[in-house]
Amino acid sequence: NAGVTQTPKFQVLKTGQSMTLQCAQDMNHNSMYWYRQDPGMGLRLIYYSASEGTTDKGEVPNGYNVSRLNKREFSLRLESAAPSQTSVYFCASSEEEGVGQFFGPGTRLTVL
Amino acid sequence: QKEVEQNSGPLSVPEGAIASLNCTYSDRGSQSFFWYRQYSGKSPELIMSIYSNGDKEDGRFTAQLNKASQYVSLLIRDSQPSDSATYLCAVNINTGNQFYFGTGTSLTVIP
Image (cartoon, each protein chain N blue to C red):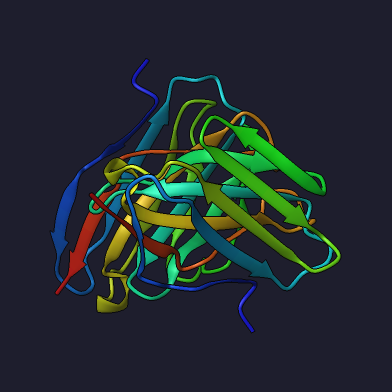
């Protein structure tokens, strides 16, 4: 099992550009999450999907959109990237709500 | 006030000693509590989950939860250099999938 996979691993964008971060899990988990990790701020939840077909805002959703494409895949879209969105983005999944999560390897995004 | 607070450290312990990591949280409705280990440049890895008051042991790791005092701790016995990492405390607030993480405590185990 690959667990949680993310693409791309690294990305550099210019201000105003858009992009989609991809995430997939092969553990048949119901819940999926997107986090960003910034120095001194810890991990912050952007969006989550409790189950296929549902999505909800987390702590820092502004500037992002998500799509739960099917049970395996959960994508994060930046419509108009800003320098403040420079961060490391992690996707995670869990078997159900409220239990421990398994993280992907992360995407390091720089917005110039 | 942050939802989850951790001492950022760094915490240094000699090899073979007990490392003690602490975490406090603000929301009394918090239901479940987790410890993750994160090596530099890597993703967080779940090492312990605890849901009720008391101690939970798994190998060299013991998680302790005290809901009345709103703290959760992680003890690492017989610390090894490979335990050197940042340890993240996470709390699930009583709204389903809302998780809050502390900023982490950096642990160094000295050979």
